[in-house]
Length: 245
Image (cartoon, rainbow, N blue to C red):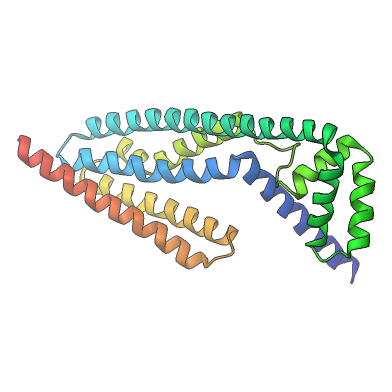
């Protein structure tokens, strides 16, 4: 392997670790949900109000209210969700710490079984488990990670998740809302749909690529959801506006 290839592999490895940490911390999920909800929900509000025949100022007010309410709601929801997840993980790790203190041989045996499941020979697995179990703290960390799938050092960050969700909901919302600050009527409606559709293509493509799926399919699926939401909400707004006029 050349030095260049080795450097490339190490960079890929670091990026993969970073992505895994972002997922466990909750930031990645919050980011995707935040920007996606911002795109779809704000576009739906804007088009429903516009479809009812409202003036551009009314559309702006409704869209901005939806942006603020949605961003705060998403941030609080993510904070509560990740906080609850961290509390549950900490409870599990606390119980595991007691087990390490009182049932170390049992945990060492289960860790050896886990290691054998990866293809390691029985003797090697037993020796590795015994060496790890010699240090209670090390056993706690390795057992949590290997057997339970919990990284004690990366339980998740409620504030990171909340901030990511708030900022990206706001960013997604602006795609639908900004045109109404510069124009109105059919032009603003068209630009809202186009900008939101472009945002949806980017989000769908990114998520699909990160998951190892077809970028084109992920982008198209996200665009279809946005187009469907746009059509339904504009239609509901139009019918509602017609009824009350």
